[in-house]
Amino acid sequence: MKLRVTKVPTWVATIHDRPGSLAMKLEDLALAGANLQFIMARRTREQPGGFVWVAGLKGAKQIRAARAAGFTQTEDLHALRVEGPDHKGLAFRVTRAVADAGVNMRGLTAAGAGKLAVMHLAFDSTADANKALRALSVVH
Image (cartoon, rainbow, N blue to C red):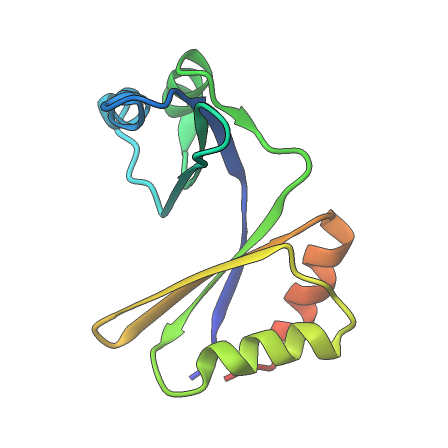
């Protein structure tokens, strides 16, 4: 079965380094009806605060809520969502196809849930994301 590969706009916001900060950001999006495809939050011990990245915002209401909560659409991170049947070696085949196309990935997150695998690949430019998208069109 062929993989489904799509471009996904990614949004980012800062979060405070205290309990509930992430929940408050996500609450604003939930109240606007967002059903997010992707959430990643990080903080470090060296710096106070951190960041949360999300994908899957749809429509003016959700975008207004995201902006009001401090989210901005990323301009320096370009992402692809890769979805397909979960089977052995899939992450290898995806990353090998991107590497063989001469594209350096900025990041990768992946999870399997039952028989489905979902990956989000991050790139530094639209050109890199487009090149990876073409390379992944033949991966099964």
